[in-house]
Image (cartoon, rainbow, N blue to C red; front, side):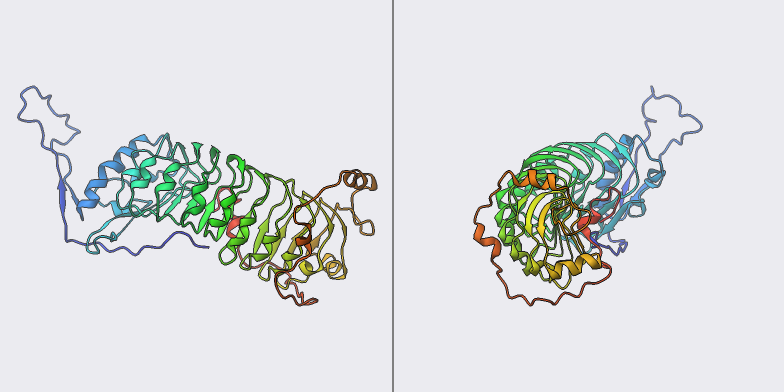
Length: 412
């Protein structure tokens, strides 16, 4: 998924602004200028007043940068801001004859600065800010909410800390939010899931809370909660995302409870990963309704029972990972997927298959009964299914944006 819009830039000569500084030759106490310093500084001419306004903001930020291994900031000189490396211009939405700083892309620059406050929050025409793989720190300024056009914000793989950036809640047009691989902590406000976000990447932070009950209110296509400390069960409201959610990652958290029957409503889902949690109970047969699903990973949980045949019949399934659980039975369709390498059921309690848990491990697990609410729902299938129709592909050719988000330096 390409998330960064491509701009085509045109320079206009409609507006010309000059910044100059008068020497202090009228002051008799002024020291004599050094021969190496010109008496009159270079005159700067800008294509538009909007560029003249942001010039001193950029220069002030440049002076706060403490590390620039690729010498990026050496290009941030003179009046031609649209040719600074990392800066892009376009016509602002409110004036198609003007030219303004519309986008910043610092991805991979490895710049260091103690804060971004006073920089991006002071760029009134900014629409996109991407800064993956830098060493920016501090917190995210609440003044970002005052930027009228900002709709993509990527500060992933930096050193930001503090609580979830509340400025996000005031950004009504934000559609892309990527704050993964930072040091944010605390709770994610439930209001985030009521915003019009297409992409929400929260993975690899220190968030600690129950998954919000209004999870199903988000229109997001891609969701990553991975590698945090989210607790509780997966909310039943996830079924409300039937027409939007394509990929969702819950892996490596502290989720508990049983898988909700409503997962079967996610008719657009292609990737579902809740591996390495504390989920328990049987697999709901409603999973057999996920006609577009390609990858399901539930490894490393406390799931048990039979692997539903309707799940193994899904026609687009490429990878079904159920290892390190306590499943006890598989049917003929699932055995075919095991043989083809699509289904992984290693370290379960299926005694007639190789590489299973010991009898003692299985016995100790089943000595402690576990119960799921609405037990009858686990046998319900809320769709029409055609058995024996699985024809698995040998490789997964489509890129996964959610899994890409688990790679620290991956640009999205």
